[in-house]
Length: 197
Image (tube, rainbow, N blue to C red; front, side, top):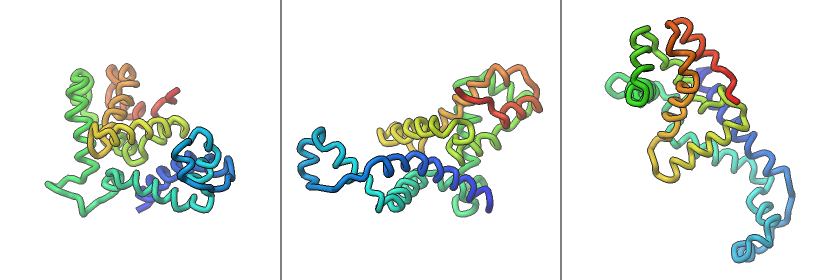
C-alpha cells in the first residue's frame, strides 16, 4: 500500500536528518570506556566518537526507527490484524482525540463540528501516521518528537499519548479560523494547515 510506505519513509527521513550530523562531525578514536565513565567531562570527544561510530550508523538508524515504530506507530498502519469491534486502531485513536478529548477540552468547537457535520478524522489520521512532520519544519519536528518520546519515557501515558494533545493543540491553534466557518471552509483550512512558526 503506497500510503503505508510513504508515511513510514517520512518518519525514517526525520530520524536520518536528526542523526546524520552526529556521525559526520568527528572521527575520534575509541579508548578505554571506563575512563570515560569515571570522568566524562575530560573525554567528551572520545565519548562522542565511541557512541557515534560511522561504521554503526545503519545499525543505530534501524534501532531508533524500530524503537519509535514499536511505541504504537505501526498500529496506525495495520489494517486487519488489529480490528476489534469493527474498528481499526487508527480510527479508535482519532475518535478518542476528536470525540472524547476535544469534547472535554473545547465543548464549543466540538459542538460546532457536530453542527456543520464535519469529520476531521482524515486530517488527524495524516498527523498521526507521519507524526506531524508535514505540519512543521523538520527541525521543529525533532523537538516535538523529543517531547512525545520523553513523556512516554517518564510513564505519563501509554501508546505515545502526547500525540493526542499535540493534535488538539494543532486544532486549537487554528480554532479562530474554524469556529465561524462552515463545513467546506473548515476542511480547506484543516487540509491546508497554515505555516507554524
